[in-house]
Length: 449
Image (cartoon, rainbow, N blue to C red; front, side, top):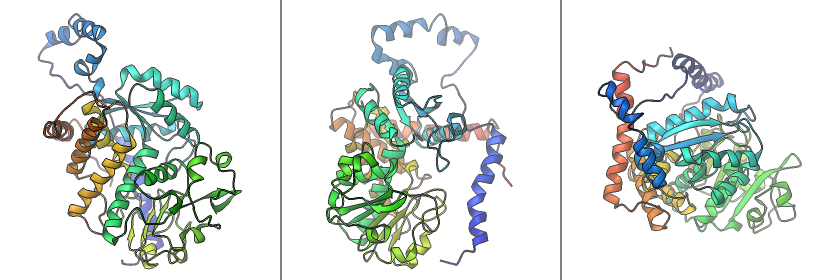
């Protein structure tokens, strides 16, 4: 790769933020409400509103399950946040976090055909957040939790998965884990290593790191083969059973106690020595991980430094240090490992079969489907599908919907062929609506220069 100067890197890193300010102001946000029914003339208001609307109200009162047939509730999810862990910005509050939730809604709609509504809550109390989500259930068919600080994010998700009547998903945890696993499946296939045999250094055990570790174990990685590193007394430390893990890492202690079977001690360098895979969610870099530490890894090493906006180590530094495959969270580098290629399709499949929850089994199926799609057309520099590949979203939605039926948690029984037709219609229709609005001049062309 050609050498990139510091000035070029800084300019490249700043460009999205500069364009973002211009376009957010230009459009006044990213989402709006649009009708999905035809208004032929003014008389249709008597059909869609009073007095005609009383009939579907009576039908739903008699049979509440008909709400998803007679309204758009069955295709609507809430993106819920308290603004306490927004991107790499930290606790910036619910109002400052709103642009992220609105952006999430845009991805839901454009990539998955899902109507999503940003809900930014004016509370940081986990039990109040849980109660607020429960109160929202009549209006939504699913909940996407977003940008909630740990450790309460674990408690909130687990509690709601137990108690909510609709699917609840925390994308920072489950979505990230699903896509990282997809990237790992692809990378391992390329280097010829088995997931049941590799050793993994998991750097950072926050929301994403915890979920990745848990799903890796579900996927067949022996827990003892995972070396977890996080801050202990301000120092990056390999976690061992000598530590009070539950006190240090609330809601994660039991899982962490099963990792690091060799009771290896030390920091990042020791964790990386001889490992096949490095996955990191530590903090924005560069320089958090050094090239000389990557050199300590096994042959054909796989590196996923996933911090945003800048990875813990530049990908070309990993490659120069001997890594075989490198992925990051950025779209402007090869091998983007980003949850955006997962959650819109997963929810599409969930909603189309009215699944009661989103299981680990559904996440595993989604990861395998993403990896298979990439394998069919990818290379070492293209291990995951991209957001501009609608076929990957369609396939994942179908497989997730079929898995939900297989697990007995779907209210709708539908064949694979019919489910694919349904998914294609919604996803392709969403993009067509966008294009039609642009072509009609209802959405002005984006201009940043």
